[in-house]
Image: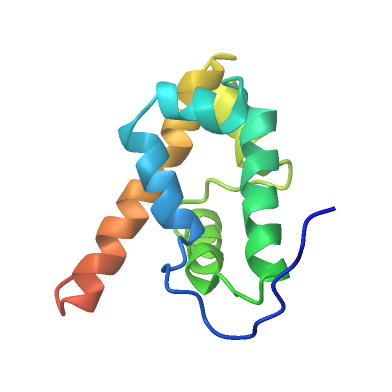
Amino acid sequence: MSRRNDSRSPTSQPHVYLLDYLMRMRQGMPMQLLLSMGEINTTRMVAFVDGYRSCLRANGLEDEEYGRFHEWLRDVKEEFPTDGWDAKFLRDCDGDHERAIRKFLDFVAEFVALRERERQGGR
Protein backbone atom coordinates (compact mmCIF):
# COMPACT_ATOMS: atom_id res chain seq x y z
CA MET A 1 0.00 0.00 0.00
CA SER A 2 1.34 3.41 -0.89
CA ARG A 3 1.92 6.09 1.68
CA ARG A 4 -0.44 9.02 1.45
CA ASN A 5 0.65 12.60 1.94
CA ASP A 6 -2.05 14.29 4.04
CA SER A 7 -0.62 17.75 3.63
CA ARG A 8 -3.36 20.30 2.95
CA SER A 9 -1.07 22.77 1.19
CA PRO A 10 -1.93 23.63 -2.41
CA THR A 11 0.01 21.85 -5.09
CA SER A 12 2.50 23.72 -7.20
CA GLN A 13 1.00 22.30 -10.40
CA PRO A 14 -1.94 24.15 -11.96
CA HIS A 15 -5.17 22.24 -12.36
CA VAL A 16 -6.11 21.15 -15.86
CA TYR A 17 -9.82 21.66 -16.29
CA LEU A 18 -11.82 19.53 -18.69
CA LEU A 19 -12.22 21.97 -21.57
CA ASP A 20 -8.46 22.61 -21.58
CA TYR A 21 -7.78 18.88 -21.75
CA LEU A 22 -10.39 18.38 -24.47
CA MET A 23 -8.69 21.11 -26.52
CA ARG A 24 -5.42 19.17 -26.20
CA MET A 25 -7.19 16.01 -27.33
CA ARG A 26 -8.60 17.85 -30.34
CA GLN A 27 -5.17 19.10 -31.38
CA GLY A 28 -3.66 15.64 -31.19
CA MET A 29 -6.45 13.64 -32.81
CA PRO A 30 -6.66 10.76 -33.35
CA MET A 31 -3.54 9.68 -31.46
CA GLN A 32 -4.47 11.60 -28.30
CA LEU A 33 -7.84 9.86 -28.21
CA LEU A 34 -6.16 6.48 -28.37
CA LEU A 35 -3.72 7.43 -25.61
CA SER A 36 -6.47 8.81 -23.39
CA MET A 37 -9.19 6.22 -24.00
CA GLY A 38 -7.62 3.19 -25.65
CA GLU A 39 -10.23 3.15 -28.41
CA ILE A 40 -11.96 5.79 -30.49
CA ASN A 41 -15.51 5.27 -29.34
CA THR A 42 -18.22 7.76 -28.31
CA THR A 43 -19.27 5.64 -25.32
CA ARG A 44 -15.69 5.69 -24.06
CA MET A 45 -15.51 9.44 -24.69
CA VAL A 46 -18.60 10.04 -22.55
CA ALA A 47 -17.14 7.81 -19.83
CA PHE A 48 -13.82 9.68 -20.08
CA VAL A 49 -15.54 13.06 -19.69
CA ASP A 50 -17.66 11.82 -16.78
CA GLY A 51 -14.61 10.29 -15.10
CA TYR A 52 -12.52 13.43 -15.56
CA ARG A 53 -15.28 15.57 -14.03
CA SER A 54 -15.72 13.11 -11.19
CA CYS A 55 -11.99 13.19 -10.46
CA LEU A 56 -12.02 16.99 -10.37
CA ARG A 57 -14.95 16.97 -7.91
CA ALA A 58 -13.25 14.33 -5.76
CA ASN A 59 -10.30 16.68 -5.48
CA GLY A 60 -12.48 19.60 -4.42
CA LEU A 61 -12.57 21.36 -7.78
CA GLU A 62 -15.76 22.51 -9.44
CA ASP A 63 -15.44 22.80 -13.22
CA GLU A 64 -18.00 25.55 -13.77
CA GLU A 65 -16.81 26.26 -17.31
CA TYR A 66 -17.70 22.75 -18.47
CA GLY A 67 -21.16 23.30 -17.01
CA ARG A 68 -21.45 26.49 -19.04
CA PHE A 69 -20.32 24.58 -22.15
CA HIS A 70 -22.94 21.91 -21.51
CA GLU A 71 -25.67 24.56 -21.17
CA TRP A 72 -24.46 26.36 -24.32
CA LEU A 73 -24.42 23.12 -26.30
CA ARG A 74 -27.96 22.37 -25.13
CA ASP A 75 -29.56 25.84 -25.17
CA VAL A 76 -27.72 27.78 -27.87
CA LYS A 77 -26.61 25.09 -30.30
CA GLU A 78 -29.52 22.74 -29.53
CA GLU A 79 -27.10 19.83 -29.83
CA PHE A 80 -27.68 18.04 -26.52
CA PRO A 81 -30.87 15.98 -26.76
CA THR A 82 -32.13 13.80 -23.92
CA ASP A 83 -30.25 10.80 -25.33
CA GLY A 84 -26.95 12.73 -25.12
CA TRP A 85 -24.51 14.33 -27.53
CA ASP A 86 -22.86 10.99 -28.23
CA ALA A 87 -25.99 9.32 -29.61
CA LYS A 88 -26.98 12.39 -31.65
CA PHE A 89 -23.52 13.01 -33.09
CA LEU A 90 -23.07 9.32 -33.91
CA ARG A 91 -26.35 9.45 -35.88
CA ASP A 92 -25.30 12.73 -37.53
CA CYS A 93 -21.98 11.16 -38.55
CA ASP A 94 -23.45 7.91 -39.94
CA GLY A 95 -22.02 5.78 -37.14
CA ASP A 96 -18.46 7.08 -37.50
CA HIS A 97 -17.16 7.39 -33.94
CA GLU A 98 -14.12 9.48 -34.82
CA ARG A 99 -16.20 12.00 -36.76
CA ALA A 100 -18.76 12.17 -33.92
CA ILE A 101 -16.02 12.85 -31.36
CA ARG A 102 -14.45 15.40 -33.71
CA LYS A 103 -17.82 17.15 -33.95
CA PHE A 104 -18.03 17.27 -30.14
CA LEU A 105 -14.47 18.60 -29.86
CA ASP A 106 -15.17 21.19 -32.58
CA PHE A 107 -18.05 22.47 -30.45
CA VAL A 108 -15.65 22.60 -27.49
CA ALA A 109 -13.26 24.71 -29.59
CA GLU A 110 -16.08 27.00 -30.73
CA PHE A 111 -17.21 27.54 -27.14
CA VAL A 112 -13.67 28.15 -25.87
CA ALA A 113 -13.08 30.74 -28.62
CA LEU A 114 -16.41 32.43 -27.84
CA ARG A 115 -15.61 32.62 -24.12
CA GLU A 116 -12.15 33.99 -24.88
CA ARG A 117 -13.64 36.75 -27.04
CA GLU A 118 -16.11 37.56 -24.25
CA ARG A 119 -13.26 37.79 -21.71
CA GLN A 120 -11.44 40.20 -24.00
CA GLY A 121 -14.54 42.40 -24.24
CA GLY A 122 -15.53 41.55 -27.81
CA ARG A 123 -18.42 39.59 -29.19
